[in-house]
Amino acid sequence: MSRKKRIPEIMSPAGDFICADAAIKAGADAVYFGVEGLNMRAGAKNFSASEMGRLSKLCDKFGVKKYLALNTIYFDGDLPALKRTVRLAKNSGVDAVISWDFAAIDLAREFGMEAFLSTQASAANKRAIALWHKALGVNRFVLARECPISDIAKIRSSLNKILGKSEAKKIQFEVFAHGAMCVSVSGRCFMSLFNCGKSANRGECMQPCRREYFVRDSRGEGEGFLVGKGYVMSPKDLCALPFLEKLLDAGIDSLKIEGRNRNAEYVFETVSASREAVDFYAENRSAKDFKPRFDGLARGLQERVGKVFNRGFSSGFYMGKPVGDWTSSGNFATRKKRILGRVLNYFSKQKVAQISVDDASISAGDEFQIEGSTTGFVRANAGEIFLSGAPAKSAEKGDVISVKVPSKVRKNDRVYVFKDEKK
Image (tube, rainbow, N blue to C red):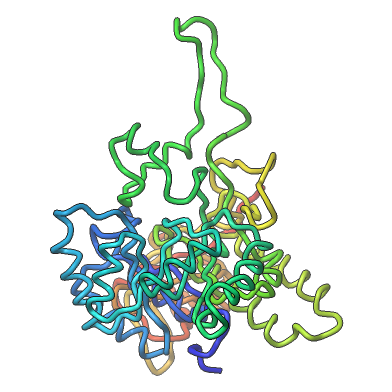
């Protein structure tokens, strides 16, 4: 089945080329990315404007769409760079920009590019959506994260009356399905700016909300107190897998995964889990036993994504306002990625990589990952390990091993091994 025809679309973050490759190999239909200095993830690696052409070619090879995040606030001095970037995005074959600043949307229209309305605009009702569509021709809306599922279906139904059926059909809804959430209403946080001089609305959030706070009286007397339980302003991560079928039933068009600051391992696991869930839904929705089978699948997939970085999981606002079980602290991942070493050589006929074990150990059966700027992302299982040409059960720091890999890797590519955490 062509990725271009899949509904809903699965959209993956791409902080760099390795993450983009991981997204493609995991089954993403689209990737979204930022360029240096012009998006809401200033701390991510991002791409240079000149790299958009290379990224487009990589995505086009696999029928994957690419969206440029121009989703911050722009000052007058930013406009020349913004205009150059939009022009280059158009010439590079980027499919759309994700914006909420009127200047970015206007420039997209000037160069004949589609603009998706960012969640930073907090579009959360039918009249706002209808106005954006009629006034500026916006067809896709990244709905505010505070919208419950019940509102999504109501908004879609109401647009038929406001816009007419033919225009309403053009409207697409994009929603977040996984990743970090903000304690503030989407796009309305000023805490980082006031506390650290770095604006969240300019992509520079220092995340003071992710810290634990200690309170004492103004005179400095007494022992003081930790505020609440844990990190009271740090929400758990969103994970929509347990109720994903409800989102799909509501008529959404794109499932978006947050995480342009996250690594390729996170991208691969979250995208592949969403891919499996959506494909199961498409193939089995009409089956009588769909619900128990889907629930079982969702539990297993949530366990899988729980292996990578997460702050614990929440349903966000989809089921209503989260009360009580909301905040979290630290990393709840049940599996850790360790540095194994580097690739010394690759033997194409045998599809074998020679690897220097420089840090963590590896055992037969361990899962490992290879990353490189040209190679991209390769995931494999060490079914057999060879030391000096002989099978071995494990290898330690200082050893040189040979293992099968599914695709070409290159000298000096980084190699990581996965180890389950003991709880």
